Image (tube, rainbow over all chains, first blue to last red; front, side, top):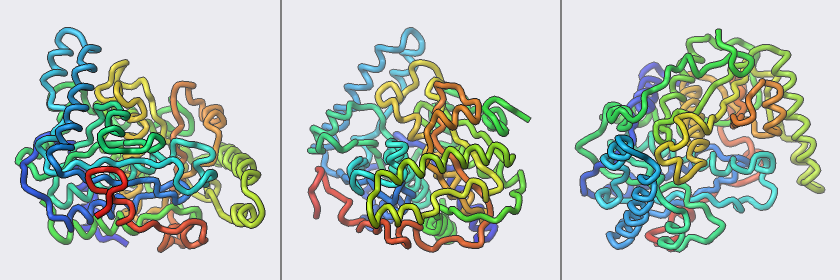
Amino acid sequence: MFTDQEKEAIYKAIYTRRDVRTFRPDPIPSEIILKILDAAHHAPSVGFMQPWNFIVISTDEIKNRLAWAADKERRALAIHYEGDRETQFLQLKVEGIKQAPLTICITCDPTRGGSHVLGRNSIPETDSLSTACAIQNMWLAACAEGLAMGWVSFYKKNDIRDILDIPPHIDPLALISIGYTDHYPIKPILESANWEKRLMLHELIFHEKWGSQK
Amino acid sequence: MFTDQEKEAIYKAIYTRRDVRTFRPDPIPSEIILKILDAAHHAPSVGFMQPWNFIVISTDEIKNRLAWAADKERRALAIHYEGDRETQFLQLKVEGIKQAPLTICITCDPTRGGSHVLGRNSIPETDSLSTACAIQNMWLAACAEGLAMGWVSFYKKNDIRDILDIPPHIDPLALISIGYTDHYPIKPILESANWEKRLMLHELIFHEKWGSQK
């Protein structure tokens, strides 16, 4: 059972959690890192396969190589935008890998649990979805701990495999920057930058069948 | 900033949340459903694309058809297990669709936000990963509200599309049973059933490179 105060705390984390791209260099106590990784590890997973690993990166040498891979991809993607949208895109700060004291690469091992993982046999991508649930747990825990987190999704997976010695069958699903920040955003960065608007919840809810609204 | 009490509440939800397969028939107040869907809607999404929809199903007719699709898949999957593992598999209760007062189908629309969603251009499956984050938010909110939730991943997606009139390009990513329960598990059901064990966190953490443990 949860008290009203406990419920409020959970919604507070859900509603104030933001994707952050600007960090202070201050180190993070290692016991706090363990706390948020343990929160990740207690996510649900299909067939209880727990397909995740966490590569914790703190050296400048490796962070610089990851930042290089992300920036290369950012420049490649910019070519797909034109005119004002390209200018707007290039002004967005899409990652803070060099600034943040830590980067955590979260991987998904599709072979964990053997060849016939319960549930994954029907929907193979449930291993990645489980790993995403772990990231969301970690994000809410980080938010509660006063930490800022940014999910970087600009890279070619094979660049990340090369830099971090990740075997070919393992998916480097996310690069996460973590640190403290002086600029915790109130709204999503892409909403403040007028890149996209928040959709209305009631337009996303259907009843009984697709497309049927009350 | 979060107080110590607030932090504890968030970890309490993360650590006590379970996948549930046994429900009471009592209805769920519609304002509680809206609260947990709004929690889902406040998940992070790549390029702020918010790719999710929620099909809320309460009629027996449609729940029975969904349960039929899940049971058909369960029987097909049982054929891949042999001997004791097959017996053990067939004894597991893998879904509670008919029991739960509500089923929510959570879908992912890969076309939302146009052809060049920021971030998704690099890693297309980030739309599904965003939707999984929404499910985890919803799960923690449901747990806080005293609701039990079960993620059913036994079905052929085209059966679900047929039953719910979902267009071919939309992914019926998850079927979620929700209701109250008298049997909220303390441990994951698959751990209690000796199907899988919880892995040790420290064995899942690497430093700087894949495979490097301190």
